Amino acid sequence: MLTFGTPSTTCSSTPLTQVVILECFSVPKISENLRILSRRLGIQVTRDLTIPFQLTHQPKPNRVLLTLSAFAVSLAAPGDGGIMAEVVMIQESTRGRLLTALRLAFYPAFEPAAEKRFEALKMEAENARGSGDLAKAEKLYLTAMAEARASSDPSHLNQTRHGLARVYREQRRYREAEHIFRDLLEEAVNSPQPNAQVHAGHMSFALIYQDEGKPAEAEEHYKAAVVETEKTELWPDRGFFCSTSMWLAKFYVEQHRYSESEPIFQRVLEIYEKDGSLRSSLPHHLEEFAKVYEAQEKYIAAEELYRRALKICEELDGGSPSWLTMRALDNLAGFCQARGRYPEAEKLFSGRLMIKIRGCSSEKRLATMDKSERA
Image 1 (spheres, one colour):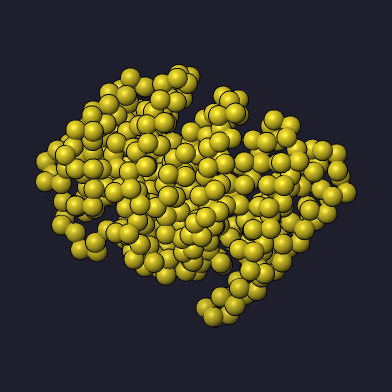
Image 2: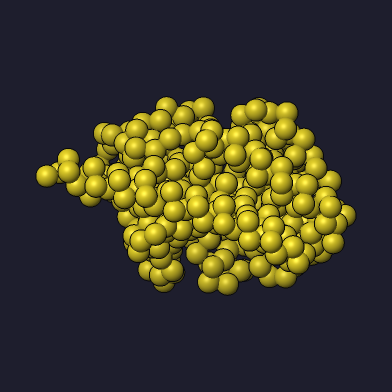
């Protein structure tokens, strides 16, 4: 349920640097497992709610690594009320190993045989969906659903139903997807315990109706999802309110309803500014907000936000420019170029190129060191 950033580029056919962004709900329960995962992959966790993982060098062959283009996973452990996560990978699809690492991080090492089989089947279905083989994914989800009905863990059936509905949505079989999502939403609403699945249900309907070109229905469910994130017993951290609100804001932008999107962007900006734990999300938000101003030809306001995003990226980098700074430079350079300010745009593009060159040189040195170690 995220859209983050742009792919990083490198100086070789095999990317040496890549970024995984993972958003988790029920974060306190799994934060330690995430730290274990980060150590296993040799990556750094900079936040708990929206967690950017950035590999600092090309892993050795025995390192766990997945390269999925854009892949969503639903994770749930018995008794936790469900954990939803979405992974955005920046690299070409080869699939497989990071997903295994995620499973190792989120699930107990020693599971009953039936549990292991179910998880393996579900992962295979998710892999098929992520690779675009929707027919295979449907078949696997139906098989997993049959096994889930015999399971003592009710979350198994919910996970498979949700996964199958997503497959139907991607196949444009909207009525079948709606039927499953409606049952899941009704069950969540009628549950005696507060749960995150009400939010998930509203988001699912919003996306279906947006796909179908039904903006009024989509808006209704986006708004309902935002209301759910106001429930502090479920979402004590404001980060999830912000990410859900941005779905609504971007929906308004697609409809060219800028006057309705701007207050949402502004409210989220104020939250990011006040909450230091959300600071890593601030540059991207500023850039997206700037694009809204730019679309309305409010160029002074747009440029101010682009420049502010670049400044914050440079501060976050701490003297070691990353893909975040490169993206900020690209955005500001593109803005200047579109305004006919070519010398300024050229200077910014040159700055981005120098960061890339330095990064490639650093990666080559690390690769040489790794080769020497293996020798």
